[in-house]
Length: 474
Image (cartoon, rainbow, N blue to C red):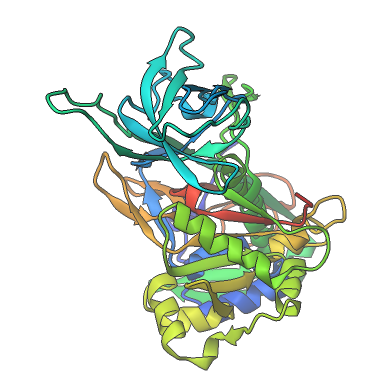
C-alpha cells in the first residue's frame, strides 16, 4: 500500500494538514487550546514558552560536564587508632569517593578536618595512603596537636570530612597531581506516535477550519487537535519519566528486521540519579524547609539567581499555605524583570502567557508554575503515586560543553531535525473512499487515517544543581 504525508499531498493540492505547532498562534492562544483540548499545562508547554528547544542532528547528543574541583570524603567505617593523645588515626575511604579507575581526591600532605567531642575543629595531616585494597584506600592521619586523642570510633562510619590546605617541610617535593575529569552524559531521543481514524460519514460531520501558513491553506479540526494533544501527553510522560532502554527491548520493523525501541531518560529520572532531594514529609509544607534549597544549591556552585519550580497542584497549594509571600507575574518590579530576562529570554509576553507566581527566599527567586502532568487525575495524579505533592527546581542557566565549546540551556528539549528533515512533529494522511477531496484516494475503504510522530530528547545538564521536592518522611 502506498503511503502519503503532508509534503507529498501538496503535489496534488495546495491544502494539507499541519501540526498545531506550525501555526502562528500567539502563546496565549496555544495555552487556551491546551486547556480546552489537552490535559492542562504540560512540561513540554513550559519549556516551549521558555524558548528552551533546539535542533539535534542525530538521535542522541553527548554533552560533557566538568567535575567539581574540590571535594569532600566520607568514612566507610569507624576509624581505628587514635587511642592516646597524638596517636595516628586510620580512615577508609567510601567507594563513592573513588572513580571508575579507583582514583581518589585526597593526597599526602593535605589536611583533613575533624570536629572533636569538645566541639572544636582539629586538623590531621594525611601522612600516607594504603592502597593494598585498591577499592578501599586507607588514609593514615596524624594530628598536628599532640594533645588530640580522636579515640576509637571518634570518626563514625558515614561521617563526611572536608579536606583543607597542604603543609610541607623545606626542601621537599611537590604533592601528587589531581584531576577533575569530564563527565560525559548521553541524551537519547524517544520516538512517540499517535493515530486517528475516521469513517467517511464521521469525517463529513467533523468541523474543519482553514488556516494560512506560508501562503498555503492548511486545515485543522477539534478531533485532530485532541489527537495531537494525546501525542503531546505521550511526549510529556517521556520527557518527565522516560526510562533508557538498557534491557534490549526490540520491535520488528515492517521490513522484517529487529530494532531496539528508541527511548531516552526523562528529567525526573535524571534527577533520581544525580540531583538533591528535599523530603518535606507527608504533612503540610514548612516554610523553613525551603532554607535547605539555597544551602544545597550553594554547595553545588549556585549562589543566587532565578530557579524554576515546576510543581504539582498539591505542592503548589502547600507552598501557598506555608505563608510564603507570592508575587503575581504581572506585578512588575526588579524581580519580574530579572525573571523575564533569565527564564524567558527577555520576552515579557511569553512570561505573562505562562501565568506563573514567584517569591524570593535565601537569595533565589523562584518561578513557580503548576505543571498539570504531575496532577492529572488520569495520569500521575492518581493516589497510587505521590506526584501531585511533588515537584522539582532547577537554576535558570546555560552550560558550556567542555569538549565542544558549545553553550546550551541547562534544561531543554532537543528535536531531531537535519538536512531538511524535521521529526519534531510529523503528520501523515492515508485517505480512502471518503469524499475528502483534499487528499488523493489511496485505499478502497471508506476511511481516512491520520498518523503523527515525534522524535525528541530531554537534555539536562548540571543535574547536580537541581533538587526534587518529595512528600516523603526522611
